[in-house]
Image 1 (cartoon, rainbow, N blue to C red):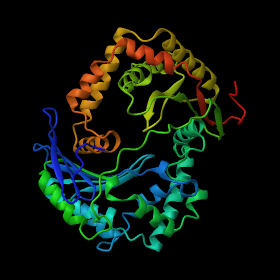
Image 2: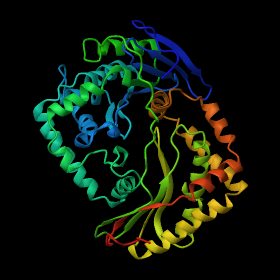
Image 3: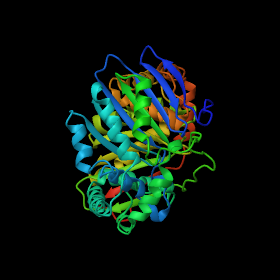
Image 4: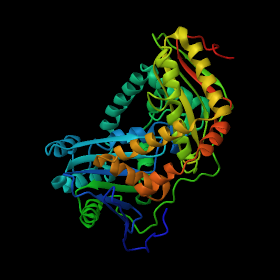
Length: 443
């Protein structure tokens, strides 16, 4: 992932940035290939510590669907050194918090504690991620919890429509599947299958450890090495994994309409199309375009659909990006009888921007929103920790704050309008959850 991969057998440390808008960022690659990144912010009294693994739901085969998420649940259930209660109580006893989440391309386990309790957080979190025993009774307990989570998700049509839209775009590709898996895949999954997934995928070259707050980089590296000693992550020398391949690119489905009939009081709709991947230089222009179309209360869609016509309570646009693919979409929640009007207005606005572009005033507002939301998001240690890990794991480098802001500033009106003309003229897929027949909206 980086040109500074260490020679086998020794750790290599370098300073990535000494940012006036941030802290001092350092990166160490351990002999095992595991990477440790820190941002020292002396003014903070807390530290956020995260273990990020380059494994998500898109890395599962069909029968494994849900394995990454299942494993995320299980890693807090006990190790050779600690029970599940000890894992949670040791952190909570010092007022800290722990949590985890699984995405389609990575999984994260994190803790936030006072700076003086960072050694404890490192020991507990490294123990949980590196040395979980995955006891059979815990597998059965968490299976029940996950099945309840899936059922709860099915009762939330506002969430379900996003999964339906992913299926409309990606079909049977792993990017189109539920991160949690389904009842059909989770129910028969065995401890042996999960253990195999764990030990095959959770290896040092695929792991990035990130921490931000009042800390010392060398001390963090030393504590991590101590915590991982004599665990399955204490391995022979290896180079860090390269970032996820973008070849061959994901093949998306032709534009389609999917309807999930459900007796709801409100209809939930998403209209969108395939877009650009996360390394495309046009992502900064897409961020500006998204802000103008549906990124806030001043956006075109919000003003037209909610403020002027009162057709929907919630309407917004968004862009999701992966290593080799992406989507751009508009979501709206409205009364079932207003869906046709909302869709007609949305299509008309997208066509208008594709044909005519946006204005200079909208460009300035969209750029201001992008820069402001990014900088304001850096005001807590958790977001700074996430920025370190995502830069390393997803991009292979950490873009300095000033450079990122400069990239947004450099977006021109022509950049946005050319992207809009290409993107918004594409055939759109539609996902709908609500009281409709499956054959509705086929036009």
